[in-house]
Image (cartoon, rainbow, N blue to C red; front, top):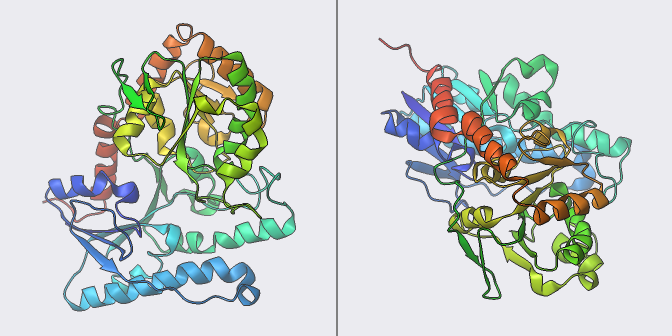
Length: 409
């Protein structure tokens, strides 16, 4: 069958699924933004979206919908030309986050439309209002959050089905549409993310750390409050004082993935670091920036203790990947983490805001690696049994997508 994948940053969540569908003999095409430089083995078409000038004072709560629906119009016009040239997909699978799927039923009404339903913004009960240190919380913030979800609801209502990677993320959608959602994770390549006692990582200062060394890790796409960077850094002085041989390896950029940029500062990295810099031995704190995937794998393999924090929000791929690599994960006691990590069995949980608790738990984890070896092994087993790419998630994803195609004869 003909399958069209849509993602402004393709391959995105379709990294493994799209090539697998092509391998299985389907006619696969991806449509992505012309500014996207990521490469894929899948045949890819591009659309050019310049966006529209938006007056914040005029649009207010409609700003997000205006932005997303404008992209949806751009995509619809490109798809209209594709239809005029004779292209008719059987199945369309697109991420709903940027409005790309909003009007595709108008172009191809007979095609089955699946949306990747990653997260539904809410006025309370998730990320908004969770951490008020940097963002005020009141009625205005609640209404803004609800307004941000308008295009997500429309996208799902107009689709034939939706897919969410975790049960908690699916639960953020209104009960009236939750029955449209299937929960299947993108999958973790546990043949790559494996424990490796020979792993090494060269740090920016030239020092090399190895599996078995006292290494504390923290990894995120960008260093920001949504992923608990501020809590982790505030816990570091006590950790480093108690563990004078520990090396701290921090991965992440200095941009903003989620939430807002700090006021009056270049980025969250330096703003939070400035709070604690004088209390740290900076020769043992290693900021790696954004790293290539093989380097990330090695970092997980040398980690003695790995801290992962998140607001009640989208679960990072790195969380499950670290478990597959056999890390001892110390995670925040927030809903996305609690879905995949059980305290004392597959990892350790600490209240997100408990800086003292983070220090004490990570000190203990660094001091007694043998004690926590069974937990590391159980974490990997859990990840492989429930989230392995090739044996669990990819087969389920393939079956899900193929179920929308023409009946087999």
